[in-house]
Image 1 (cartoon, protein in one colour):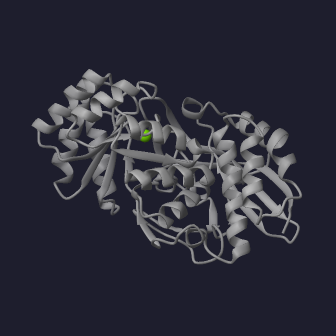
Image 2: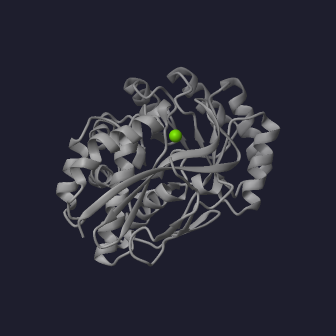
Length: 362
Ligand SMILES: [Mg+2]
């Protein structure tokens, strides 16, 4: 059961429509795939997206971090020695959270395969099925309305609307989407740090005035503006979620203690994987702060690790795992079943993957 090799390749999956936020526009998932093979022939899978605007990582930096510093430390180690492996992984270098996340999830995949359990059961086994929202990209209003109606047709009951490029248009966007989809659909908003605290409060007041029934607002102001987050959270009647402001367990503690958010968005690419995410979850549990599980622009492989974690833990009450729903193709066989809004965990051991289809050798 010791680790024999750590192989890297590229994973390319085209998107249904280009993905646009206030920070960037992309038209395919182009990630690094990690395959860890053991002496007895098991394979654990991980995936790392190069989200330079958030984590500072590129495909080259992810590859370099794993090949040069992480892999040499883990070769020969038992996959059941999770504590030691995690300390080697996180001690190998600073930062590089997506590179670490990809290796971490492959380690958890192998660990739960060895235990003979699907990963969500090995981590807590709270539920088998979770329901995700779908992201509506920032676009001209008519296009956002059309995308929202299509999402509702596909069975999504929660829309996550991206805002922030032009805050004067933002209110109109939400008014038109709410009008089109009706009252039954939940709408959550993500400003991706696009507003100043004053703008955020004015926009929130306007959303309230138009009775738009917003479930929550994600990261209204710059990630480093803790005072701004406190100001908005304190004065907003709509729950405020911290995304870019919370990478790890320590940030979570600081944000909760300061009253800088009502909800936390956990992403494996920010925490550096499941191991650190479990610490963050413990803190949220202690303070009884609900969490969302989110993803970057990722395909089914890494999103499956996040889905297993969400299925395992009760405190994860919001799910934003729409990466696979945005992809044109299914890049892997096996694993959880992504059926539009519903994600059902595999009952086979580990993450459950049997074959990777979208692999491009480097
Ligand atoms: Mg966000």
